[in-house]
Image (cartoon, rainbow, N blue to C red):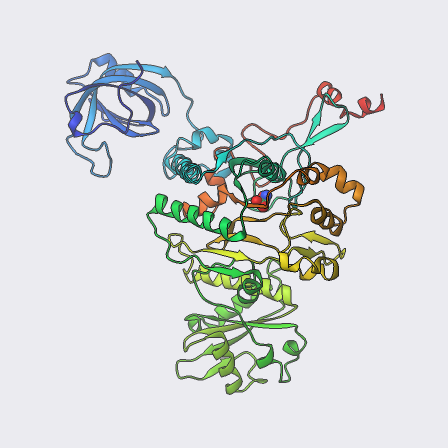
Length: 585
Ligand code: ASP
């Protein structure tokens, strides 16, 4: 028997028992005639004691020679500690060791395995299995498990069936490139790894499964952005015979359930906002609504004077920053530099100080009267003591810049408390978006999303104006999920694919299987997918999804522990028809 208890289990009520424990040597304190070892496993740490009075001399000597991270098994008696440690669950006891067995030696680890480690990110990634021994990483993985079990329980209780869909498939466009897998048995042909199980879950609806879910890996070959993983996990769901309202209802329920299970939080409000409103009021489609600073469009109030910068702009937008009139001139200049950084891209920023005495002082006093500025203050909701920041230019760019400024200021002002959760549905997305360079339409969500029934006719006359029954779930300024009501008839699907630039032949070759299925009694259906990694990291109150993935890839898409991706040897390349010599044959 390896163990009678784990290292987090023993307390005062076990005093007097003889126990067997296994674990890793976290720390050794050697005081000559007495020594302590902190023995660690997943469940906790138990203090072991060896001393010259009660321990055999060879055993005391062996204990003193234990290196960090050695794997040992001990047998001993639970005794009361002289100095109890109230901060440790096992802090009232220690185990007086009678037998010690070395199960495996360990090299000195490359970084300290403690909550605060001296290891840099790269080093810890290379030795991820050692990093996982540390509480912060271990606890994140346990937290993830808790969230995913709560998801499974909830969805199963709601009648969703967990069905696995294949990984070796044909391309399903979700807006990224595919990872592909060469087929040895079909020379020159490739599978694609799923960007999502989208078409399969729709086929499950045609198959009558009615409610499907899966916690599933998805693969997207995207240019790497910070905190993106080429493989990530979705909570993927689909439902038959539903309207948008039914889907929102179920997943509002799931979100509430998770916040209740994980944090004991009862969400009072679950607001909805149209895409158009989100863009106009927050400058992006995933607004953080935990704080105000809403946009006020100032065109009418600001374009009647001689200030040409504003007169030439398609959009003039102001936000009131609470309490920021206290900023010094230097701080405001730094903020102007911040919005001018290439990552934000504004040309400049106009500001108005709202003084306590009710007067205003702006960077454009030459052009605007106190009454003008008072009207801006009213429009932005600025009070005495606030600072109004105004950006201007093209509509899309100005909204994006003002949104970046709003988020930055909120972070600086401490308005983004990770312990406060504000979910939000963003609804009524446009069906299509036009590529500004090529003029081609792309599906805003994906090509299987249905136009709103009342917009069906616009599909022929003005496709850009068509909205979809598509929705995103936003939590604290992050998109954590999205979905839609789907097309379920051949004609609409084929019209959609042709709008997206597919020839009839291409459409049939790529999506014929789906359109064919629609001709055999496809029920109306819809669904969504949540990003599990991001959801878990937000619920966990942390920024990076990597901290919640057991074996993540780095920012260059590499697994530095196993050193992947890696070249293949010539023989394997030839077998897969991938080498130039094989191609020549
Ligand atoms: N397949 C979609 C996605 O991965 C989600 C959905 O529409 O259900 O974003």
